[in-house]
Length: 168
Length: 140
Image (cartoon, rainbow over all chains, first blue to last red; front, side, top):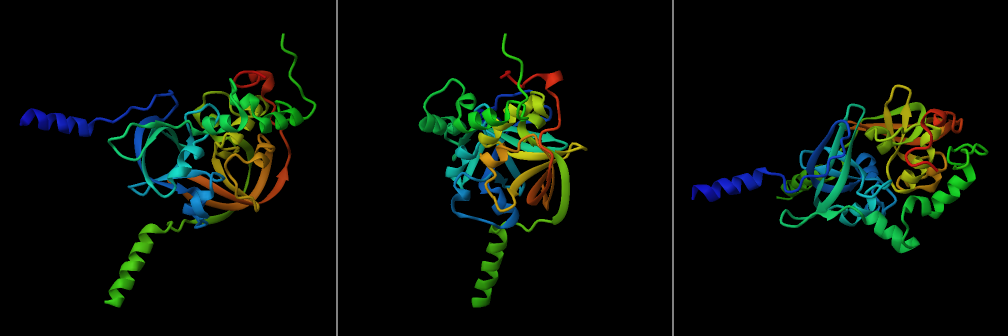
């Protein structure tokens, strides 16, 4: 009886999944449990249906009352709005890195699930949806039509007429 | 009984409605930045060196901030009447600009959020960092 009880307690105490570390100052691997919320709704009471349908930054309102802005998903140069918006108003578990920088606190979500007995689903919806709209690309960010338009107009430095030297 | 029901309903509403936050009118001057690259320190996240990456990250939906001279971050949740704060092409076109804005500041749980009511000044991109840092992270 004692051994199974010990194993059960260990299983409860151990993290279900450890997020991949990125060696970012102040990062901490955590599983955030809470409700997916629209940040403008939480802060201003301005609450359109469906958490803004993907047009707004989203967060996780944890059980302890802390509101965590989700800044990053598991795709390079992309956030996690597309991963979270389908869970608007619902409780989730989010595996990732909480970065408690003295200047700002952000959450980088790597996986999402809705029940403890489920595996985490990687937070890569941005790339799946981008590929469905634009087709496959080795680097979505260089192939993105809007990014190409803006960088073609203003240059890679953001100053019209200022161009980097040609590649050797 | 009806009074009890009303009290219960009020208590439930208080639990489920967004909490009222302290709000303050402010004027903020700083550079528009990609919050993640700047905070993570994984690359040099300021000025011309990082402009291209900041455009990508804005369109990718990563939150955009104003970073002031003291290193404080103000997450932009609204610019004037435009409440799209994720993947907004308009915000991507002013990435890396030095701006002064008026707005409403809301602080909660270690984060400053800013609802901009007016862009009072936009000097464009003036932080010239590319000579020292090249184009971050992968060149052009």
